[in-house]
Length: 469
Image 1 (cartoon, rainbow, N blue to C red):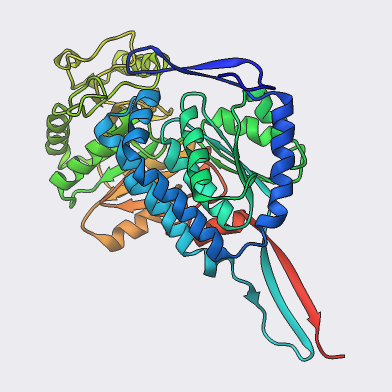
Image 2 (cartoon, one colour):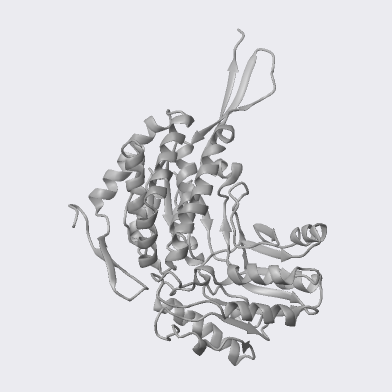
């Protein structure tokens, strides 16, 4: 149904079968103006609610998602193609964990900062909400990425306007239903379906006070350019080419099991997924043999079938990009270890492509330097820590990096030298909400989650009170 005041339509094409899954309309000028005005007006009352009241409402919204998980996971699979057996995990695990953690630490994180006593004066710093936070969320983890900003922004006393990717508009609409169910006051949380040009116009509007964006490097540059016309901050989580280093003392079986999952989960469409692996030459053959063997156990197919473990990529064009990177690498001397014909669901010219493992790779190949965002990984042999460290840092990205070793002390020393936002030891592709989520270089700027995440969503206000006259 078309809403009055809306403009051009857009369609969400399901990667499951190429059908038009849904159609929506971009917001019209009247809707945009109305929602920006409502967000500004509603924030004045919302910022005066207690943290305890905000927490109750946000928890009820989380409970809505948990009680509607079967509907939510089916919608998610149809929109972006993740196997349905994994779609519920996004809500049950990561979404719930992050949201509830940020709610639990809101009180101490947002508390006044007392300053030492001074005769005749009372002094403290208060963390006040910014105003309206504009959240721009991607399709690959539409709930995990958006919850990083939405819940802490609301807990800090801000109002929120959410714009989801055109591939996953139902996720924004689910949020809207959840907060309506939770009893959130009108105007505190709103959604809009917007084109790229409309996004840029909203960012420059004086009623937007912060922009939280997750997406591509090019998208981040466009956001930063628009925001540069005003004195507002942005949080940008962008691309990644996350490395793993398997040291000679690593538990090979454990490393293989976790790195295969970290590489191919979500068809490799994860900003912190593992895209390149460096293995000590003494255990290289053993590691590769185990990695290939486990990779062959994946079942590529219709993501709505319960036994499917690898679904389609989000679009045929994305799959074509991955195939082109593989072909370029092979042409330059890389060796492909997976016979993709052994995966019956593999069909060139569709979003369904088999996983691939490459060896004999080097950093002259795009497969080891440019973001792939698909089910393929390059594995290189290295002589020692120094060579591994040099290769890990030979990247324009820096989101996460993992080390696989039994030597914790040495892993910390290596991790301290890696140019990255998060260092893992013996795990990967995970986001701990108690830790700062941040990147360096082209992986973005700013910080989400943890106590530090609240700093970006508030501004300090100093109180200097002369209490004795």
